[in-house]
Length: 168
Image (cartoon, rainbow, N blue to C red; front, side, top):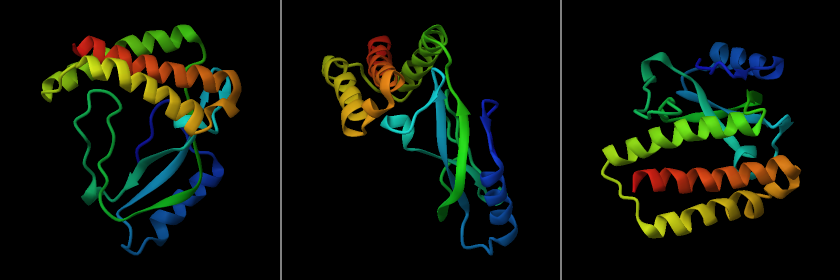
């Protein structure tokens, strides 16, 4: 079981984890958890962060991590299912926290893209941030989360732009 320092498993999820470990007869190699993020003091239900599923419980024999510089995570081991309950994630509380983290994360993301031979094209700088905002705020209904939903969608767009700008 892997949990980040800013995540907590409430009783419903904890019970679901316990049942999965005790009752799993080998038909599943991993278990996904629906994650709910508190952002600027509000839990996001819609947008990109409102439909977040994370792999946090896997068989030890199937446990492998990806090589990401940020957001290291478990690789999908194969057969998975979704557990009951929500994994609660404490996101940024202020715009200052958001901008500080964004600067650090975009630098690491650009470094990793460079290491993998990616290029920072002008097309990516122009198109990808716009698409990210439209996807999160409109297509995935982020506008229903009010101000935090708007900030999250805008943040995601700026994050993508900054990552490609640093790569370029």
